[in-house]
Image (cartoon, rainbow, N blue to C red; front, top):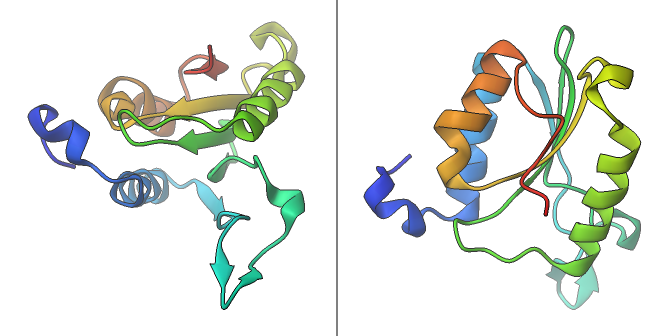
Length: 132
């Protein structure tokens, strides 16, 4: 990852690669569903049912599930993504009910050191993060 002075230059693809590498380092299983809006030869690739699904689904035997939407530092979240994250955050419930086993997060490159790494390495952090 580039230093904090060039954090605005980090692409979503670069950020996603860094998150996946860190997740694998700390023994998380990782799933990524490509953007449902992608087109190949004028045809929809994937399923419209995947619209709004967060970029990564992470699972760790001890730490639980993380649904993580990734954005560039100044990237905007689409309404369908915001709605999906809101529903997931509501379903995750208070930490006391889930034992912090289900988390819903919106991550940006500036979150890597203070939010992403501690969660992936130690399983510690907020149940819902980055969602207004």
